[in-house]
Length: 268
Image 1 (cartoon, one colour):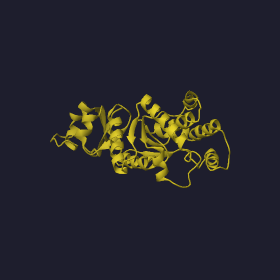
Image 2 (spheres, helix red, strand yellow; image 1 turned 30 degrees about the vertical axis):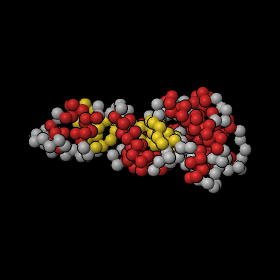
Image 3 (cartoon, one colour; image 1 turned 180 degrees about the horizontal axis):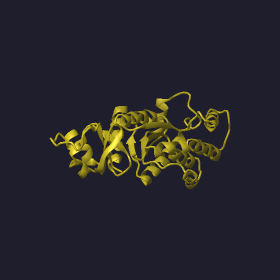
């Protein structure tokens, strides 16, 4: 079973995180992987409900308490997320750990403290920052803005923190001011690149020759089970793969076996 992968989208409100996260979910599913979208804050939980009340003026908490609630809200989903990752699911997060660092640091909280308290949450394998100006966020949502969204000076500091984190953490930074489709093309490229770079994502590919070229290892699936596995070089020379996928006229070994349905190329 392939290991899971966690992809996190970060950025100011109205930067397009939800839109791109949803697109990545479909992009991954179309390539044969189980994929789930997890959005934070999760307002369906008890802590999430309290966060929502605070954001809309029904509660009054200091910045430290707010970030403690945001972090606790993620921990409410921790066991579920770990389980999904262990099952090989690709998780796409609309906001994740870096949000607390960005918004907390923008309100004079210690970024080290904010990072440390989240150290038992799963790490992100890829973080994509959709970068927009605070003024763009206002244009995209001019009414019903919460307490953070209304504070443009705060938003500017949040953006600065995101840039610092992105540069230190080797994130992918994309210009979020552009058309959604243009952004999506760059997002797909980033996801594909990370899949080629030795992480644990696994895609089912129609173009087997290309898949085996970029992958370290591969798996031939028959009726949902692994029939043959090995390095890309080994699979390219395997009679089963040559006959079923590469067009070679090589007798298949054995009899009575189901024909393979796909090759999954893994960079893990």
